[in-house]
Image (cartoon, rainbow, N blue to C red; front, side):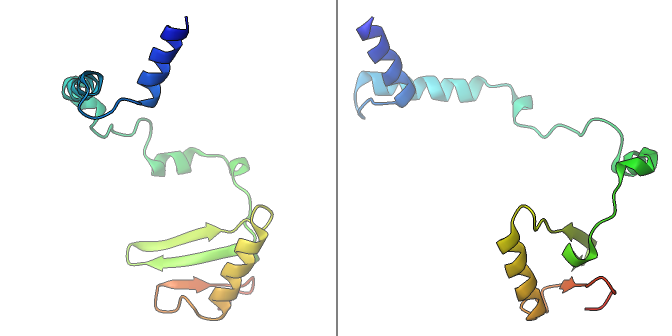
Length: 121
């Protein structure tokens, strides 16, 4: 039983030294596995289900909640606006540091803007 356990732990934790036959055998097994793996495992699968626009159109109003403007970051990218809701209840120091950096204009020129509840920068 002890020999079996030693063999299992040796395979799982890869404790073979280079140049030994068990090492060479494991390397060959890994290469064979990679070469015989079906190609579809490595290809991106198309998303299943409805497109995002359809999901948004079908979602009822009860699926949505208002966001807190004081904890909302608007990130303007060339592709459009990204709205990020901060979570001070989950990461209060992170949110405080981020707000401090935004108010100090640290991100100016990097397409990031911060809006308070009145819509002012």
